[in-house]
Length: 165
Image (cartoon, helix red, strand yellow):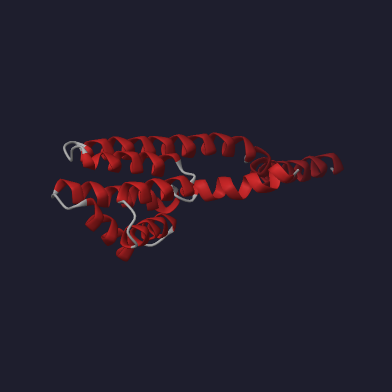
């Protein structure tokens, strides 16, 4: 019982990163910044100042931790674990690789963005499949039954007139 009460808000929080394109928009900003050669900290600072939503709030928390003296990789890892989102954690792990090489980080982030887009499409398709079954009875009651009544009532009137003659 307690698990059920806790699970729903956590799932909603996890899904909130993919709604309204928050995380994909942040990823796009990161990709563009890395392609033009900006430092990761500058990109994160730009995101925290100019974007809105859960993702921007978490990146703002990361920037605050970095400003207080924490290593950017450690701060990003802590914030990613706090987010409870697999894609945010993967993004943090990819950004941690900037110490080794900045080459192809934008391509790795693009692959992550494509994975997120595929998952969103799959979720929408799954939801549409469930929606078809759920709409059967309302459509039956609201569309087909009135249509049948509109056809049968004049027919029944005409039949009663013919019997009365």
